[in-house]
Amino acid sequence: MAPQKSARLAGALFVITFITSIPALALYNDVLNETHFIVGAGNDTKVFLGAFLELLLIVANLGTALVLYPVLKRENEPLALGYVAARTMESVFIAIGIVSVLSIVTLQQDAGLHAAALVPIGASLVAVHDWTFLLGPGFVVGIGNGLILGYLMYRSALVPRRLAVLGMIGGALICASGVAVLFGAFDKGSLPQGIATIPEFIWELALGIYLFVKGFRPAAVTALYAAPVDGPVAEPV
Image (cartoon, rainbow, N blue to C red):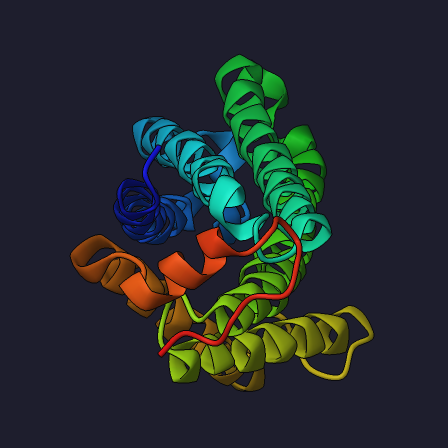
């Protein structure tokens, strides 16, 4: 695929990750926050729709890595592979989260007279989802989309370097906030964690829009393809 086509497809896929992930989280609100959802008080259809959106999210996540890999490997192949691996691991965590919420729905539908006894199990499955969210979107994203992709975009200058620097800053903050939550420095979903996600949020959205509208910087593409794979790249004009 031509580099500019890859750029625009990657941009579209990044935008799709926002279109799918944000509504999915809203659709999960009942199952994740209502303690007695499992006894039959929740809306199963909303959960199924949220799960479907997250499946599309997984496809988009993997798509961004696979589409960008042939271009990014010309800058640094090991790091480009690392980006694919990070996107894959993020998707694995998301998939585990999907299974956990769908398991709650299954228990709810089959519980019958024993529904109340399943409340602790439902709470355990919600805890599994919360941890997968912390370790995937709340940590691995910082490594893959933030630090690795930001660095590769900075080195190659395929997008404006100030934008790529934002990605590296956002990635570092996401990782730091995830570790802080892991060790109890502050609570999951607290204001400090929310603030720490803002640069990464802006980076990914801005990157998606930039790539979809403008593609890669032509001078950077020329320099990248003029150099040997994983070799020194001439500074683009």
